[in-house]
Image (spheres, rainbow, N blue to C red):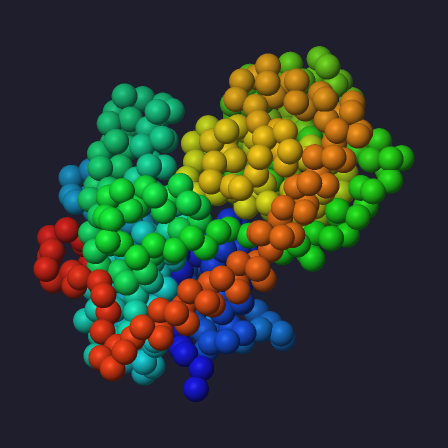
Length: 429
């Protein structure tokens, strides 16, 4: 009998497009080759519900996420012990669905996708069919991300709120390091951050990836010099309902884009990603800027781009948008923090730019120097094909899980410390 795994996700993987959706979906797709897998996740009102997939065996149950950042949740987050980023995912319907799953099926592994769903850990541990192992997949170290966000907060009060939330998250993260049996991280850097806090934590690196075959046509379309010379698009891809991406593009358009336009007046800046807020939509008033909103397929945009920009100032984990651009054969210009955690070397696989002048210099060179652009994109494509393809990552994850399951022994007991030993540290549902 195949081992059974339940993935408890913070997002809907029915039609994955965001970083979290892509990671959740592709990890589960690879695991489905050797395990019986079930996904239990949330969906927002604007998202598609699951559709049947003919080539994969993923059972899906999706529940409504509900309203986020309500006044009540913001006040509770400010005065209580649980930050609003976790309260947004506390949902009675999800709790009922999880209890129902656990009451009917004995899972070998429950995989928690992100700290956001950690409040459901109490339900899992209290279940009569408690899984052999509880795994936490850290998409990033959330306390670090929130603390970085606080540096760019619009007001002193908001800065104070976010710093308090970061401290709350750090306490919860330390509790989770004790309570879960295995911790998956997207980079060695994140792994070191967790083991610095808890040296005995069982941490394994399972990096973010990309479907290299999906972008193969985009990569091959850039082989010819004549075709490449026609490219006139500077591209940013990313969910525009994610605050770090909004901050990145507002900064880029304000501080960097006017300088680039003076050097390259004929290029177009494309901001591609779902649910852009009004202030991002307003950027399209500039005749050199287009804001696409949700796209059914981003590959045609990569096919006309001479560079992909990642002007991220606030980040955690690793950027799938960089891996996608590399798979599509489009050179990347990123801030140092945007490329953090990836095994990509500056001036070999991508360009780094941390000031407006750096961005202008790198973007201009990529536009004007075809040989340099092709050298960079070729090396980057080899990197993602050999290390970051989801199939390669899937093999490592499968090996990690079967090594874990083989350690179960006669008792099959989990290593993690029960939440009951620290009952006030983590809010439950």
